[in-house]
Image 1 (spheres, rainbow, N blue to C red):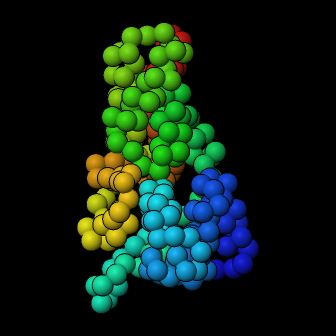
Image 2: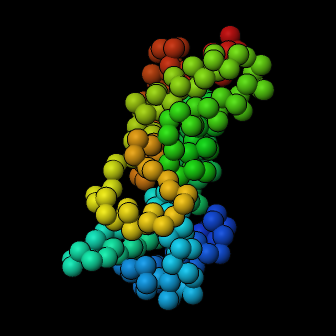
Length: 221
């Protein structure tokens, strides 16, 4: 990877998560697979702060981890390609609005901000934002948001988070961290965002079946 790629990735990390996460991310970009002690020494951050930074990076699909061949510790690394994808977030949000309407846009924004989230958390937060705008009953709004969320999953715009390959590795990240963040059963945007390829087909289906149109468009009729 070039120095320019590392520099761009560092700027994106700092803008999104602050200087400590940027320091950990940049160290891993430059040095590759490293354990907690090496990261702490290389960044000057305490172990507990390094762990919190790694949780953020893993939560947002930016860091990878795997046990060392000895099985005594875990190695962490950061994908420069995944970090650079953050520069495309506005495009992702626009695509979600074109495919799934205003509700789809809000769902996409929330998940991009969280990295990965429970379906119930996303539905509740988006419904809260829509209740004021639409002036509808909370239960009714939540039902509409849930239907849209399920549609985005079926359309492969959202995917369920896969469990980590090793529980011990996850334990290395969360050990001693009071703010543990379980990731099982959560959803995220796929890293390749393959659903964008289906834009044309989706629009064609919407034209043929009004029931597939975004709720914001149906409401105007």
